[in-house]
Length: 91
Image (cartoon, rainbow, N blue to C red):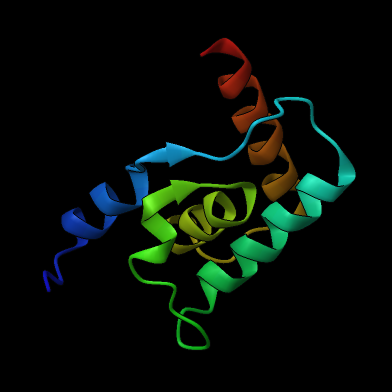
């Protein structure tokens, strides 16, 4: 296992499948995204390991970003969620 920061950042940005099939934002997806973010910040509690990198969902996208950015205000997490929605729409 590679413990370098660059390796972990690259792992956090890759995925084999995208399970986010609906680009329309809603409160339920935002809640799931926030749950993932909080778990990503507290990786001592639960580490998803490779499961977090095989496919992309709103939960593990939040998890990945939480690992990268750490504790963040709810407003900034919401802004990031909506930015991700816009990026998904443009694909």
